[in-house]
Image (tube, rainbow, N blue to C red; front, side):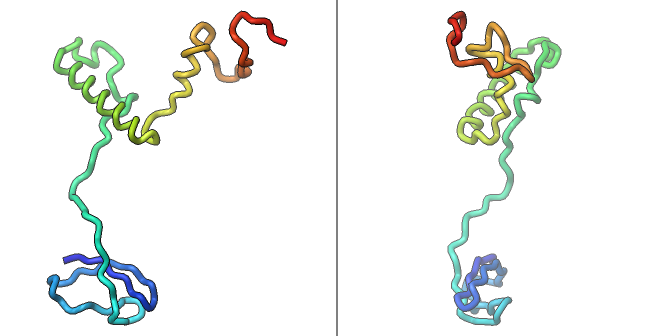
Length: 129
């Protein structure tokens, strides 16, 4: 069995495999003390979670969906929905949306391009001071 221990005299924390839960308390590998405290261990589940395909890996053409095959399109749509939900819960997994935002909203009529000066905050068509 694998247990987590802490040694009060030296403060060392470590994992140690023991034959059974009734085994004698082991000695600290750092200082040799026998006053170890058994810690509550976190549950470890085998396996791994997959984030699913990123937006850049999703099909961008008719041919990539096998000519619009219903099952393929449904599968990719479900994957996209799962990915969006994941990105909502974990924004660090979401791609950089600034390139998209540069072509939406107030930039829809005149996209913001690399190197363009940032426009003023005045409404379109109004006189700037």
